[in-house]
Length: 537
Image 1 (cartoon, rainbow, N blue to C red):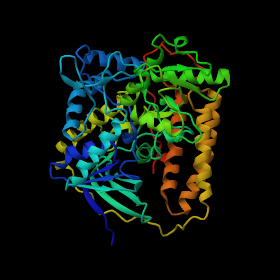
Image 2: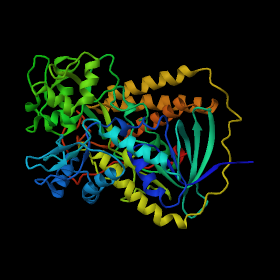
Image 3: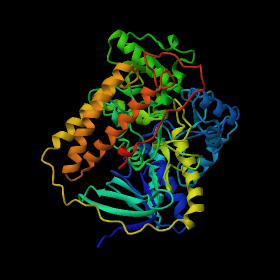
Image 4: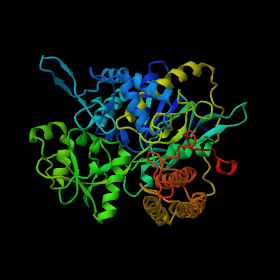
């Protein structure tokens, strides 16, 4: 007899977006499930250092924040979405403080205690609310604690979604739930839900070098694509300019705030170079800084450049960047006395599942929030610290829409169990690990910071071969978490390449040697892909 667990809302992802939504819904007598692919703290939110952008300074304004965001987005931001997001900055911070998040404060000369604000690339004012240099950790731990305490929220760690379940028998296609792999028990279960929300984060692990945790494999984007949703702007992969370069360091980010507090990018001989690329120098948007570093590395044949904050007082550095200080010290780098070796690394997915202002996707009752979604906020380049703000604002927007619609959504019908009767355990796990490595390497070489038509064509040919190999493997063997990630990642890689091929210009994060200028002959256009019938599950 088929059996499943039934929920009102199934949230796939346990980062800032997913947990915020769960907490906003939980007080309304709803049964909510939150899935985490690994431990609850393994999402990108936990590792976010910089902070959350919001207007608090007396010399700052909503209009200034909007203008900075539009400028960074290189003509592709949706102005209405930008205004919506920015105007909710202060209320989002207030809500987090109510959840127990403690932000760094400072005392003014008059004795007033107020939030300390950092400045980061692309921002014309200090408006980054933060908890030292570990903001994401503070946000994540507070939200997890609140969710664990709530009787209406069930948290499932080590649960990886195999496939979304949809119905097309109704007047419009709607979501019914998901087949989910319990990685501990190696068993697939069925979770039925009236509403499903994708909050799975981005896809930076498509690249060889990334600042993201292992979980950032584009799962939600691939799941939505196979279910029939459009995706947009996948060519705009943001490369963070400064990832720690050390043979034993694993994807450790050197926060944008280091440059915001006066850190200088220098060559091995100690000479600065950002003045040759942008008048804003180290405070230029990330795409400009990353390309400048990439240019200098390739031009000079060097492995890295350096970020130097050692001219600041030692106490200042330790107080403002305790996490970075301690982490670098483990690799015998004392940032109070010496510069930090850095390289660019894949950091943030600016495109994703196409959504409206309430986080709704193309499929009824399926929502997408956070990095998995393409809301129109980031355009061609995300401005620093707008990402956590987007998570909070669209969690609120989705909660409003879900609460309004939920009374009219029928419970899902009985869903058949996952069928594993025709597959066996794999004796060729090397296929998964080999294809994973090959995919990330050619994406780095051919679809990285600087692209060409020839490189994109080569990458697409390799993706086609890998897709066939992975599909054959998937059809013959029982699913594992590694296999599911690889299956999703190869789809996301293809979407990145196809979107990049559509854009015959250089704009924002997409830079191609074949079209090195912005095309101003027509209004800026988003790249949108629609899955064909054969690409849908």
